[in-house]
Length: 334
Image 1: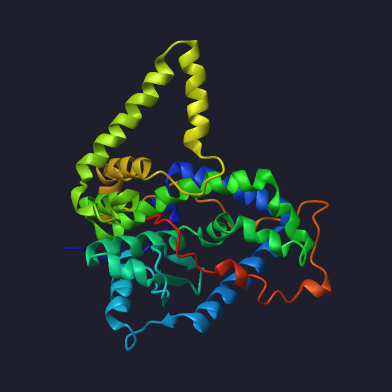
Image 2: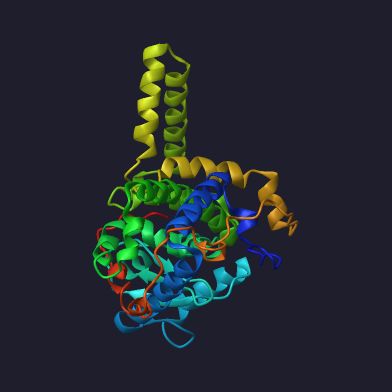
């Protein structure tokens, strides 16, 4: 039986240490490039545009429209002590949900995902996406997932240019892979059943196919163990092996890839699900861990030399809508 969590759950209680550090690097870099006030405006504009695009293109769910799916989302949000976001159903064949927003958050569920998953796994997917909202990830996640499309804005908004640097892209993608580790923790808190979360990660790693019924969580667990063994063997070897280990680290980091490794996520959420920290959160024992990185909008005065928006930049309506186009070929990220 899933029990609602005590009120007061926040990002600082669930963020994975790697996510916390990676997001701090992104926040610092972003605030330095654009200045806090401008970035706050961009986030709010993106949130408004995301809602408008979905309102015009997808079906908005509610108590009288797609009620069963809406109730599922509301139930998971209630378990986590979060407001129910705006929920949209997209007629997309892909499996990748989309979220954006803070105070007026939106969750977009593709019909392909809804049709493919049984209810227990769909709850994991929903709780995972709510984790991005809880942790304040959604706008940075948008930038990471749409970095190439961001280049289309540079001509209209010259001050977007600094965000397109290779250094910013690396920082974003490095953090993005780690952000999923926190969202997986929220998925576990929202469903309170580790085997179901493990099954969903297995599904996202390859079970979403005609041979899905032939795959098992135990098999993925063995794959994780093999991965760890091979990495440790490289690190413990001679000079050549250690050099090879450094190269492997580069490859395993997938520096230019935005998708996290399902095997790594499986390992991390399993360890956390067996930890005292997780049990304490279920019991409502909320301590006060290190605060998560402040949003870029909360940073102090813009860095010296940062370009400020001109009068003609004050209306950014519609500039972000091109970032929200669905891609039916997207791989499920869990």
